[in-house]
Amino acid sequence: MIEVVELSKRYGDKVAVDALTFQVRPGVVTGFLGPNGAGKSTTMRMILGLDAPTGGRVTVNGRRYADHRAPMREVGALLEARAVHAGRSARNHLLALAATHGIGARRVDEVIDLVGLPEAAGKRAGGFSLGMGQRLGIAVALLGDPAVVMLDEPVNGLDPDGIRWIRGLLTGLAAEGRTVFVSSHLMSEMAQTAEHLIVVGRGRLMADVPLAEFTRRASRATVRVRSPQSGALRDLLAGAGVTVTSGEPGVLEVTGLSSEQIGDRAAAAHLTLHELSTSETSLEDAFMAMTRDAVEYTGTPVRTSR
Ligand SMILES: Nc1ncnc2c1ncn2[C@@H]1O[C@H](COP(=O)(O)OP(=O)(O)OP(=O)(O)O)[C@@H](O)[C@H]1O
Image (tube, rainbow, N blue to C red; front, side):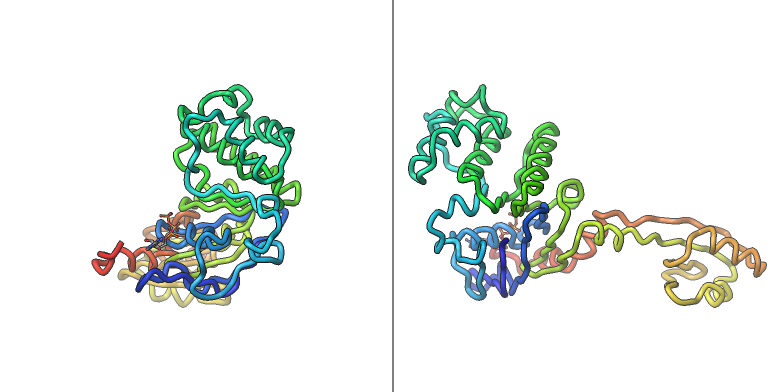
């Protein structure tokens, strides 16, 4: 379990993380979603004690990361591409790390199998492709058999096979009861990987919801109705749970009723319709709408400091 309480980080005038409070629970994959610059990496670095918070606190399994006797056994993390001794083989890299942390060679072979690197394990890590490097980074994260696994944008730059592999791995780790926290700036990616979502924009918490709930809220269909009698139609459709808005003359945007219901009611009242069409909000639209202010803000010319 990761517990973040009122966590903030400032770099000079720039507020990278702004009073974030959330928990990441075991047993499910939790997605950490936000546009570029939203503060995801900074938050993850603070979880690992690599950056000191300006305010608030964060604990992993009840303690600050640095206060754990064997932190690698508590939290396994993949942040940006790791510094690997390029001349060393993947296996030797893992063996050296394992030795430093009192982990046996058997576990090294286990994680090599787990990430699907047995053939490449003897090769120089410096010659690895992006996908192989990512697998090695994940092997490092899993070395201590940690209860909490945290990966920053693990699918960046991977091919479809690699992406599918990471999804399966994360789901499997969560099914074993681990806490799995994974960041991405792509809603489409999170929709296929995560069961719970923490959404951030401009360092602030925008949502902390199960994916199913996010999808349900996002997928409210809007029906566009064009009628020369739009005023009368509006009165006819008004009711509990129905929202009618109008952006242009003669056109209504209706939520809470299906196109069939609207068409039937209009026919019964002898009202003429010139258009009746349904549009579904995509998950991507919902995510963009949620974080739009954040993106607009960082897109202003004030952003010269970035
Ligand atoms: N060391 C630093 N010094 C100054 N500003 C920083 C530093 N690290 C991050 N920032 C700023 O803090 C904000 C949050 O950055 P962060 O990397 O945490 O976002 P992110 O959500 O991980 O984005 P991305 O997906 O682009 O990595 C950004 O505006 C970034 O420029």
